[in-house]
Length: 324
Length: 208
Ligand code: HEM
Image (tube, rainbow over all chains, first blue to last red; front, side, top):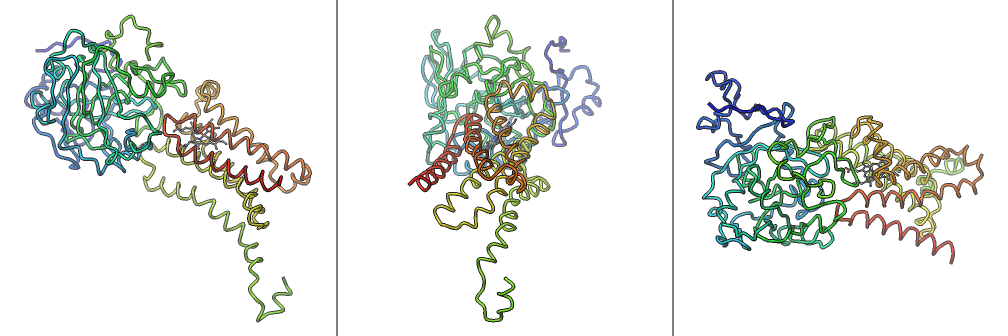
């Protein structure tokens, strides 16, 4: 039997049973006498508890139930909100723009180029890129730098596994990601006044190797919609939303810290790390609290978005006020 | 006017009277449309995933638009010679104030839920809020002195001089908007351009 040590994280490590789309896991657990060992449920039976999609996009098969530690008040955000309220400036700067303007975007076929300081790079069709890895459903909080948040059941593969498969060289210190450039399909990219394209993001190698970091291909049981970054996006849930680059076409192993787009655009306000941190305010608004989409009252923002236990060690000894 | 009626039946339609009678009610009704539409959206679940943000932004947008529409009255009069339009200027200014109040209430009452400490911290620390607050404060004396009685008491000249603050208010509102954005400044740039054109027309027409 798996013994779980009581965790110091702010978030209770119990499982949730959000919304009717989920089978009632608590009943299941009680019924099978497994109350104490809910962690064991990640085994075969787990498929029953996976999020069923709303039938908008292609359902994803062979998905394993993965990380889903959430707090008491972390109900899953309704699909409609998660797929209609987005920041994806490639399709315009308004929150409704991505859903409204991404209809023409063709996420398939897709290929991903892996290059730079690694021995196993190349250009891969998305299917081949994903196939060697296990798809997992992970339920994470998503905290935007604009102080709103959601809870989303993502489907993706471990970024660490992808890094390992690429066989990085010793000199590779960072991972750099790039978003596709298709102004004919992405209306926001036709304007030079929004952001410099392509959108670039990066992670330090140890951040990329953290088990929480995933490359996402789906959400809510289905292929990820265009407006949420189809067909491949990053999700590192302890970082602000903008770090989680969408529609990735290139992953490069590099030695120098990548010049990520928001940092280049406004270095006084956005840094490389962009870790969720209630104690370091954005110069124009507070980061101490956030509004969970669907809530009326604001709630306190948690250090590292509640993933302190999993990621704090990455930043031991770093001045997070300077490395924001 | 009574003459017109007794001189009937064949008198020509008195357009200028009709326009004069209808101008204010029509402008009033049109000016109410944004808030009515907002109410309709609110009742029909149409405010989107983040209704509070929507309320703040929607009312902020209309506050700024009414400031600009109000400022367009005199240039329109100068260009077209249609003096009648000046009669709706005060109403438009008050509608700007009305939408600013909704904007501010949404922020204070919904976004911050009357957390005065956080609001005060925002005013001190967040420059775009400071600027917005400055713009709001300048509108209060203008709204208070908007009655006909006040105009008389102050004297038209003083009143007009005081109400010139509105240029400053509008510029501050546009700066407030620009400062609150992260990227993509087309919309405030458009408002800024409109303001520049309106000011230029005044300058050209008044000092030939
Ligand atoms: C003359 C006064 C004001 C005008 C004309 C004005 C106008 C605006 C406009 C046009 C926006 C941008 C809306 C958009 O993005 O579509 C905005 C945003 C905002 N304003 Fe104002 N504003 C004024 C005063 C204030 C005051 C006094 C406060 C609070 C103390 C305030 C708080 C805000 C906030 C918090 C936002 C950002 C909303 C968000 O990030 O979602 N404003 N305002």
